[in-house]
Length: 379
Ligand code: GMT
Image 1 (spheres, helix red, strand yellow):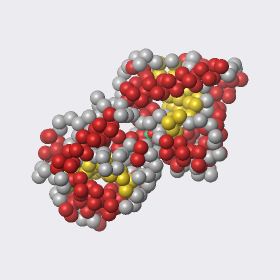
Image 2: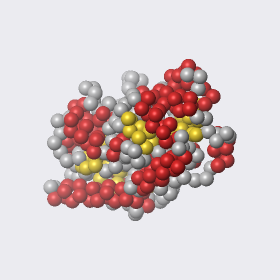
Image 3: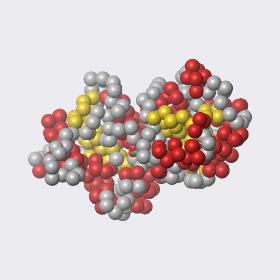
Image 4: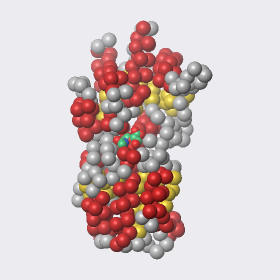
């Protein structure tokens, strides 16, 4: 197939999923065209089957807000026509789904038919999507897409409850490349960061409020009272300054290391003992899956789709959003008993294997084929 993928090129989970999916499809013999405003962060290998089309938005002085959606739509029309794409797969509804639907309508006037598949990732529904300033457009684009997927059952349910939508939504979960994400020996790094055998807790995110990183720090504070431990915070974003202040207030500054944005996430996860994900909402929790593949149990909230990944009492523990005390107790329970911790680590790795990229990508291929067949028969 000749596939166009539209995504955010930054470090966010939806961009990672879209890029890794595109790369995997290219390895399976498809031609994959990425259409976005910057080279996707993970599009770092040359496969011969992947192509990158940059969307340029001209910045006329009249524009307080350069119209990216319009530029993207025009670029989609151009790429679909000249690269003879079979389908467009857009990740994150805003503004990718509406841009693709408009491109589809423009192309239809020229007799060119292009099916559009929209993948919902989470905040495009649960936070921004249901906001009145975007809601009607998100709802319309979901209706008009030829296929819609959601990354968890929870996100599918949220979509039905936030919007008046009756159409089918296919659940295809996030996936993981187990060759890249597996525990590797980085004992030199472990010695440098935890020279006295401290337990290492870790959190990675884009440092948005929805991640409740303050809860992660407070959970760590309780653990730190009981045993030698350190907290690694990976990623960056608007909450970082508040989190730094909180660490100072709690007298934890020397025990917490801010690592910033990292490309080799798996190397850091490999030396850690426990992953913290106290999110307010989380459609799936790709960061937790990456951690589990590196043999880390997860202490998380029970928000959104996290319970579809993290199994309470087996791969970690789930607590209500904001239940810092409960999360701290469970973290201590795991960390204070080495054999228990080892068992949970093994369980986490086994669970992660159920989301192996090699098993999930064929679901997308099959779904593409179903949508193409349906579109062909309704032409
Ligand atoms: O987590 C974020 O804030 C980034 C966001 C994104 O779209 O880039 O992630 C969402 O999509 C990921 C990939 O499907 C999911 O694993 C994350 O759970 C989801 N984030 C939220 O729902 C908050």
